[in-house]
Length: 339
Ligand code: SF4
Image (cartoon, rainbow, N blue to C red; front, top):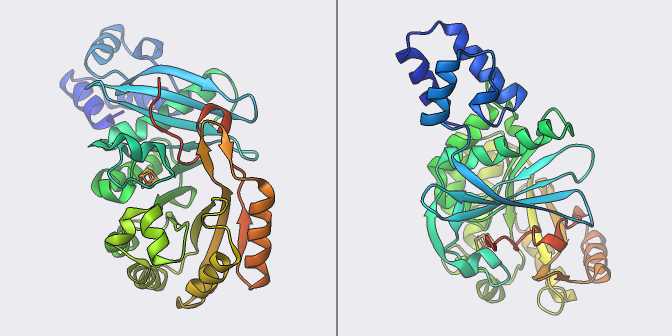
């Protein structure tokens, strides 16, 4: 929802300012999904808004629900016909939304379904924030919750390659007049676009940063994540040191454990060595996840537990994250706008 456009329409109609407040409350507090439901507004205005500024910038083509856990995935059709996916999940007591930032992705990580689609285009900031607004409407309509608590940029695309729109989307999401999701409840996950971290620390020092690492050996990481050929582990190390010095924030290193590929004792040792080589490494924390190998298969939990124990034994902070939505292909690396 580009609320600036709504403001313009209300101003052009020469209506009083309280109409603006009513419109804002209807969208961001009550979670209406059509202007027709904004009954406090004059009928004529509702009709104009419905025609010229529908609340969402896309159509919801399909929603699927996990039978395993509290996860739902939506397939959205954008105005130009491209499709993206977004995920709603409740890992603990609060609701989180995983948003996409691009249609497809240019980075071709070998384990990722989005990467196989190739890159189509960047999403606008409105298309990003509307994914959260859409799930907010859903929670309100189903009377499941009053608010979305967390947003993670872990859906389709590399957020730091759509930098301007992602920064704008974060600012809009945390705007107290809109969805009011504090920046500390928003996480950006990058594959390691090292040359954007300095700017991110300046523009959004309060957001949480996660870096998808998946391997601490340059040659092996390049095979898994070709972006490593442009920004290798040394570039990443320097960028992280600077980021931590600027923000003083904890950074999460995401590591999807893939059996027999990045799960052996030498991988644990290399990861620990790399972390220890970074200044202020006490602010780095490893999140392990069982890698989704596509179509419902994933690395056995035992392999992930062994990996975590190995890292812990070397004094590294580590958490095993639960992979959610595996049965509906909504987990990390599985989003690919399949109809
Ligand atoms: S894992 Fe992320 S960066 Fe890599 S191809 Fe998939 S969407 Fe792109």
